Image (cartoon, rainbow, N blue to C red; front, side, top):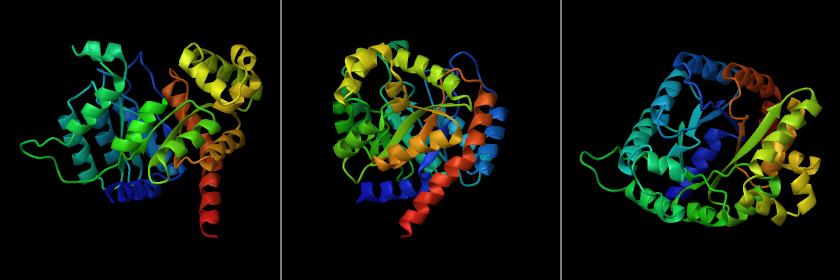
Length: 315
């Protein structure tokens, strides 16, 4: 009952589409600039914003506390809170306080991160599945004083079949990223209908479609250096040649690129395949102000996606 209630509330609060704030791993970003950005994006009509976290540099929960206070209705999610950044009991305590202070406006996305991040904190990475299971279980360990007794959605970053199955077992849903709509449909089958499915969709906005596709192709080429990613695409019917050459079909399946209508169309594909919510992610290193401007320009087309779904739901 808890999962169904929490998931239904999160689906309604998040809406079908949101965005991930532009990410930089090389520079710190002014919190005033971030506050101004989310105020603008809320006025533009976005219902949800997601933020990243690595180990060190910033605390995603503190960041969200500031951004929640700067907005009136916007929902914020961690995409993701890194499990190596804090103890599970501390994470739960902080998340519960945010959920209590801003009812219905917070979603916790968890991620197991990478071995180097574990090493940076003096710990062993171990088995990703066992590590995530242990962390999730210890989030609910008793503390003194106890954390606020407040329910909030907890989803797990997962792309592989085993982590996805674990997300369906121990969390309220999953947050995969970087796959084509066929992957979204497969994930929905794994999770079943009662779990929250948030899809990370890579986007390259731009009226010059050839240039946008060229940037998208470079992004996909980097991802395909990971053998598991290429193998995953092959399972969806993309040929070895298409994958090796990073064909237009591969690029177009994975990255939403081009004008606002093109990007809205790709969002619709993932929603039709079973996503509850799609969060748009720009290339790492995108200038923050430029990225926010681009998201603002996309807003009218994405509002049309929401309006279409509302009309369909109304019969």
